[in-house]
Length: 406
Image (cartoon, rainbow, N blue to C red; front, side):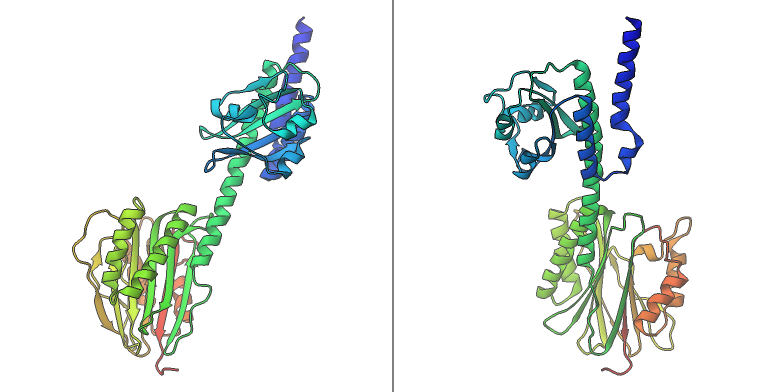
């Protein structure tokens, strides 16, 4: 009896190792699903194995991966939570065993047409939430044991981890694509101006809430925007896109930056609650001689004129967008933009460093900004402030007024 127990323990250990070994961690989610289903089919000696993932919007389970039931995936089979075998598992969040398959307990025609007789299914959870169902089946009669259930739950846990990684990767790719679509692919070439920009992510994900925008208004004024939505990842990128679009819309109906930011503040406070945003909106006159601007919790841009050192434009720093409090009327400033002058708009990642007051970075920036072509100014600023490996996202937009319009 003791020897038999040892054999059973060894077999149980072999089964656990088969679904947790390190080689699985090197597979992507789709390949891992396939490999896990192959292994569980062999270990449990079953004919079919399938994973159905939960579509939260429709509250339906969707056939995602299968072995022996590939037709289920090809047909894109869906079943509502609560209906049939898989739906019951999703509804209760508990394993279900069916020793004799009948049409009243199984709604998937593929399972019925294959002639499956016995089924075992378990829920898949991630971060405490149901995300899918894993089930196996046999063509012959089978009485599944407690050990079978535990092994299938172990496989479900492994599959859930793979799906988390897959979802995270999809979110990352979607956010990266969204952010890249929101940053201008190239800056417009406009008479009398020369422009350049930089965007550097401050973390390995490569996705943040900083952005810049440039657009020409019907009046001939040039709109310049730079901003920072709190947070990182897909959610911040989505909010950034909505804020960017809203500001463009308000810019079409407002003649001054302060009014546009006032409207934007109402929008962010109401529709983007909890997403604190700073923004600077500047407008350059059609003749390029003036800059009109307003700042919502954002650092003041630096302006350098020929024969003069760079200095922050004296614009009042109004509260950020989305605080939920009704601020006093937002203010704006208007300054001359002399021929040869350079305007540098930036986010705080450019000048803020740990263990150093921000004034140090601001002073360095003002010292390095000199009238020069925009691309040259960008390169000099990045080099002087050591921005190749920042600890926060950096966005910078540089506008140079040419000495002779062309």
